[in-house]
Image (cartoon, rainbow, N blue to C red; front, top):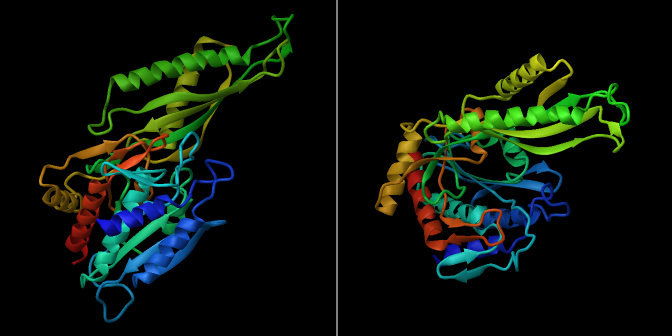
Length: 386
């Protein structure tokens, strides 16, 4: 536990605020330097991969037995954790970790430097386990914003391939086997510009957007009233940003609405854009002055893995043996990098420590749960790579 606490507090003390989330954020370079140095000091194969300018991934590898190649002969497992954090506005001493009542406080302690620390020590243990297969740790940048780290990792997958992935995001020691995705939509309504004193010449694009907002709200309520996925419930949507108009004395010719639609496995950017177009077509059928268009601007897929998949069963067995109690299979409402691994065809599960305060002003992790994660990850390594 002493080694784990020292490692975790070292990681929390490093400012790695994502600069795409917070202009001027420190980024992940100092974290990468620390992890790479730790890997070399512990006899692990160490790679530093540029994911963006000043945004390095670190990949550490404990090689399995092999007489003929650089890759071990058994099944391989990748442990994955992100090195960036969200901002620290309103926090007191966010990079000065505090230990109280078995908890470690500080930015990133829960999300997710604790999971990273547990992965690092599990990989160190793997080095001495005489395994047949390789064990890889990918410490990636930018998960909190654009996931350029995992995208870069997957773009060179042949350098560090794995048969399965475990992501150490915090899950309260449950196993997450599904999560929602999202689609960002841009909807525009079109009016006719005219002087405010001449209503017979103008069409108000902002007022027309009001019809869209009412229809989208009804669609959201309908989705949430009829959940269709056991672990994730239903899809949802919300209006995020609206803009339009030129000046107060004119009928506005344009209005733009940005919408986020949270999706379930099987839903795509194309299917969401199509359902949105149906809503716009229904409004247009009832209002000859209504003109609008919608397009998807960005999307991340939802993810799921079968509860009976071998990887899920192996992790559940390892976790229950360590915890001495049943471990729940759960779905997560937020998006994670597991979807990117899933799109690559790599089975992926998520299990991490307990705590609270992800993205909040007070953030802490239960230290005992981090130690339990380290042990569970080590046992999973033995089961898969042994």
